[in-house]
Length: 77
Image 1 (cartoon, rainbow, N blue to C red):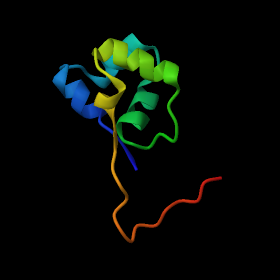
Image 2: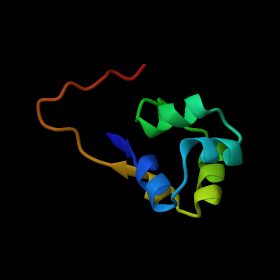
Image 3: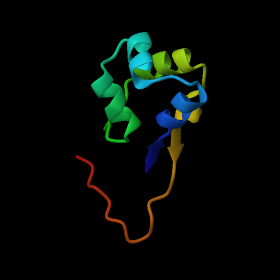
Image 4: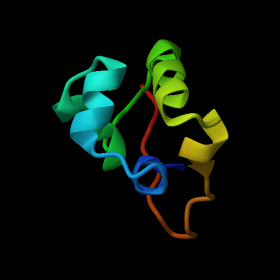
């Protein structure tokens, strides 16, 4: 599973969701969806803008963790 560490980077940069939203140019709702790990996809252009504003690498925002054993896996459509 992919874990989004946007909240960690926002805290490190002492930046609010509102400030990030304004500087990146996407809605606060979409930033919140990403921050809370509910996003199904992220455009590379959006990831680029977030990294530019937060002065970080994509790997600072995204982390891969194996699914716990016994966890149900969603079927890809």
